[in-house]
Amino acid sequence: MPFLFAIGLERIRPIHRSWKVKRAGGKITAAFPDAKVDGDLSAVIPPYGRSVLVEVKSRERRLTYSDFEPHQIAAMTDHIKHGGVALVVWWNDDGLRIMRWPVTGLAPGKGIDDKDAAGQDLQRNSDLRAMMMAHPATNRINPQGEANG
Image (tube, rainbow, N blue to C red):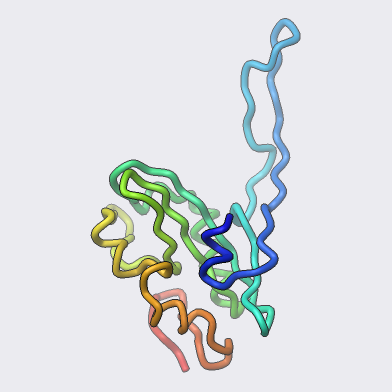
C-alpha cells in the first residue's frame, strides 16, 4: 500500500481474516469470511504511534453509506472515540481517494461521488494531512465529525 506510506503512515499491516470454504468434488465452490473484523488494514502515525484503522472500498461511481456494514461503522467510530484515526480508502473509476472517517456527505441513505471526495482526499489536501499527523492531544475528531481541541 504505497499510497498510505506516501501520506506518512508506517507499520501498515493487513488485519488477519480467516476464511471458510465450501467444497464439492474436491474443488472449492465458495469462500466467505469466518468472522467480522474491525477493518482491512492497521497502521500508525509516527512519531507518537497513534493507531490508524483503514477500511478499503472499491466502488465504480459512488460511495454510499450502505456500502459499509454496521460493524465497520461501529469499529471506525469506536477507534476515533479512543483517540485513533479511521480512514476510508476508496478505489473508483477516477482513481483512489483516502479520507478520514466520518466522511462528509456519507449518512444513512446518502452517498458521495469522486467530486465530493476530492476535497477530503488526504493525498491532495496537505492541511487535512497535517491535521491528521499532529499530536493526538491537539487533534481529535469526535464521532459526529466535529473537531475537538
